[in-house]
Length: 282
Image 1: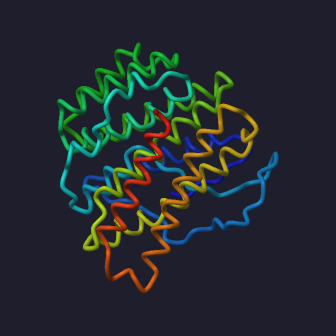
Image 2 (image 1 turned 45 degrees about the vertical axis):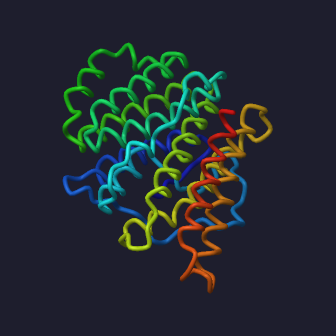
């Protein structure tokens, strides 16, 4: 999805979330993914009223793509020990929340209710520790529970929670924590997608796969306003590491060597992405 971003990235993000609800979660799990990309590496800095186009991932996109591409559900792909214990700062809690929302989406749309409940509890605990009021919204939680059997409705409520979380930090003048949620979402989505990488997947999968470097670039653009803040350094490292990992894989995929060593290069990509995650919570 392409969004335009002015001085405040959250306004653009909300529009993007709503568009994804309408376009990306239909009964047949059709996903609207742009082929053309307006972003270039020489993108200018954002100032006041200047408009810039960026790509931002949402937590339901990768699970939806994997279902559309008939990838087998594998709960081990979202297994990570002691995430809550390792989330020792507000920044890490926000990154962990982004990761947990993706994990909940993946388990939920695949109707693994036990694991989905576990991941939901992680989300609610991290939200509570960050001061987000969703865990206290009984009506919202009841609607979420009632719709666990319906992937489309579940996707809607996941996106609603995602938007409320980022909006909370906008309203409390802590937008950098909202960006940390996006960083966690992008990181976990990339890992989940890459673990299911196979040469026989359809065009929808590979079109989306090819966007991952652009998502990382979009994060870098969003972070530009906060690059001098100490709390933003880890997010910048995540975005840059994602971009480098997918650039390296892209270089191999377009080389003369691309017809061989597929598993070796897939493993290299997955291990690089897992290393980024581990570096966050070491």
